[in-house]
Length: 232
Image 1 (cartoon, rainbow, N blue to C red):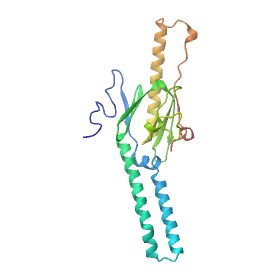
Image 2 (image 1 turned 90 degrees about the horizontal axis):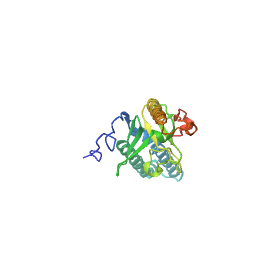
Image 3 (image 1 turned 180 degrees about the vertical axis):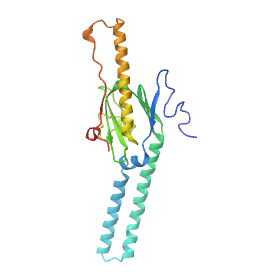
Image 4 (image 1 turned 60 degrees about the horizontal axis):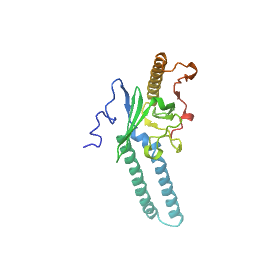
């Protein structure tokens, strides 16, 4: 039985409240995640370089071709094992992660051994970025408002890399990232407009009759810039 078999809605810890609709769901692509979060190509290159150096050393030391090949074989096996483990971890993380965008929040369900879900209401989102790659996959990090934060180490790899003190939750290695960013931007604008309308209604009802106390409601900004998004 799947560890997520008891979810009332796939990817969500509970049913959505009345009036809230699910707009999009997705997950990291495991091959993209393996390359950009687990660095399988870098690890493979590293072991390949070690094998080459070992082979050259053996040949220069007077060893025969067969002896040199056998001397580097254990490095090939070790490298293959390392790459295989990292690829397996990427597949497991991809399988256990679901990104859900509703018209009010982003929900990130993650965790291989211990499933967890983090709710990020749009009202605490200050801005969002976008970094895309040639295969149209990409990352969408979210900047939270002051005083709001997530735990970098608990949420990894669903966070912007190397932002430890002010961790930014991130939709990572998702296919068709630009389309998802457009959808998220629309959801953010709709949520802000709805919030602004509710504030105006409250003021109209006399909850706050002082016009100077009305703080302007600003829409979170989407930043479709590779340099600004800073994904890996």
